Length: 252
Image (spheres, helix red, strand yellow):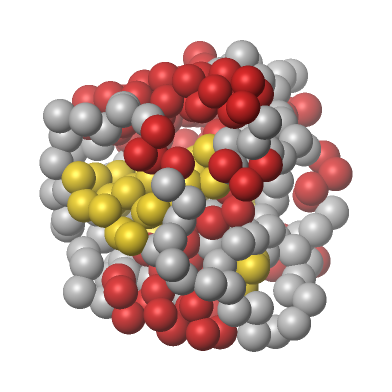
């Protein structure tokens, strides 16, 4: 297990934040790599796999904008045991690719389910009802669904989720799952409150081995307007700091 926090530098966003200062970090410089924004082409996939081949899975990784959420696929390929993946995301990330060779931020989880033999269960938490329609019927038996519409009606949903997970857990968080008072991304947002996430995270960590965690959902610099970007970036910096602290407190 990599003791350092991994920071993926696709667009320079983390150099405008300071949540990680004072921590042991390893930067993965990918700014000059083309074919990576939202869709990762076959050449970029090979390049990323080559760059990551000698890097161990970290307890915590920050991926950048949600446009790069597919990095979770490369990280989880390093897991050497049967595991469950819990995705906190306003989107299911289960879209079929436009072309088979393309990996996308909106379909990486589907790719993982189809190609990773070690991935035995997936739980998608906080997503919108609309996004659930992206999931293939053939894959639904592996997927535990907790859309936000179910969460807000079920007080102890996190206890129920924990009971349904039967393997060590990898957690992937896209901050677009949260309401906008918590974080702000360049994607449409969910409604999850910090307390709801904390209840689920603590319950899972207390009942299962947590292999690792990654976080994405920065406000992409490519979409920025100066005032909107600064406001969103400050908010996301605070959210990242809280997630980092939570991870260090709970994940051994």
